[in-house]
Image 1 (cartoon, rainbow, N blue to C red):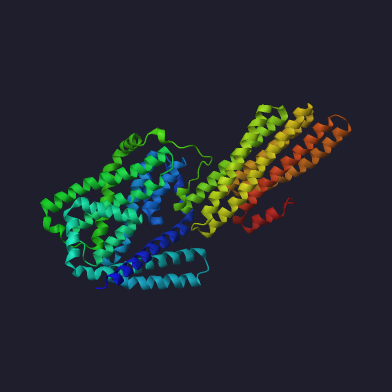
Image 2 (cartoon, rainbow, N blue to C red):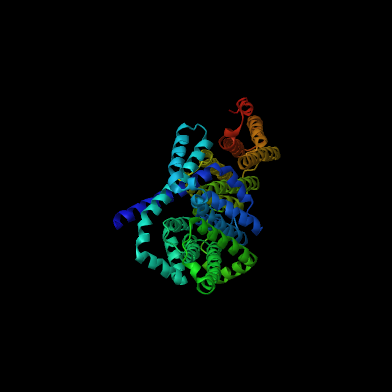
Length: 560
């Protein structure tokens, strides 16, 4: 028996299995991208809905580890409470059982066995990807190819270990694991912790089951251990996160440990006292799927009523003293990169929050200008430093996000966000320009005339209306708001020209001091520039989704 060749074949098969699972998950995420973003809004304090969301997300991403890491990221970013997290964590455990059912298809129908279906699915996936023109068809091709690669890897793994069933040492090893629950659970936990994927770990177990070398009792204990081992990924991810994020990882661990203990006790009673002979019966891949699903579903049903208690225990374990320093970003966390569709939507929310910060600085700057308020001037300058820092952090995040698997539309969104962050930062710069003009007024004790103040107020209100409509179009892809931005920007341009002529007339009539006149002209110039950046927000973010009639509307406007 060539153990070297056997090991190489098994490792190669496992690699193809992991690749297929991940590739299929990427295809599912890309094809479900638009629907995935709606799930963010479903993350309410309704824990039942949270279970459903957790299960769906895990089925799509094909990894409960990725889902729980995402949960830690959401909690760390303040987008999800611990109460919400409990339900999603429970749902993730249920969702991960789908992979085991996919692997066990061969037990249902002979022609769905890995050796039969793998080459067919790979061929279909490759063929579709070569001839497909539409992006949606290419995503489907990716899913089918990943499906086939998963089966191909499973077939290679099971084929590699089949000779082991002839060895008495292997039989004795599995008998030992079945007779010693703690050892069996530790084995499942260790293997899963190393490869950081319970779905892959269950796949290995099913490959061994295909080779007919795994008894029932061993499989039960290993499955229980696998559910504990998968918590390692979330625990590692919570390092450096805030207190609640750490507590979310602890809740995940508590949930699986408590369930494993309860079902482990049932397993010991069943296999050692009730029907000991059954424990040594060989298990099939289909039966592993059943056990895996029953454990996770019953565990959720049993512990769901005690979700609040789990939160309290986690709060006791992780004290408030472990809170790290606060960060500038509100909605972003690198852990969410595990689920790109969610990460993209969180980035959109972050950019919107960033745009609101710039708007606040603009309003404060205008107040400082009209009232020559030095405290407000200092506030604007300090906030502008924060705006610049946030721009740098958002751009760094977007660079990382652009390097993970995304759909074509999501890639377009990321490119758009890059441009918008720049435009919003420029709005902040113009606010800083306004307070510099205010400092000039204070230094030379210059004042605006009443008519100048009224005109500046009217123009500022119009610019703010333009900017707010641009933000509404940006967040909601609201076509009506986008159209209004172009209309309002035209009004701003005309107002800027009209006010410039009026003020030059006032200067010639000596109704305004020269310095105040210069500041007035510079102010309306900055305001007009802000409205230009509002138009850029519309062009970049929603312009691509408009139909031809709407495009003609924009092209007909003289601001283009």
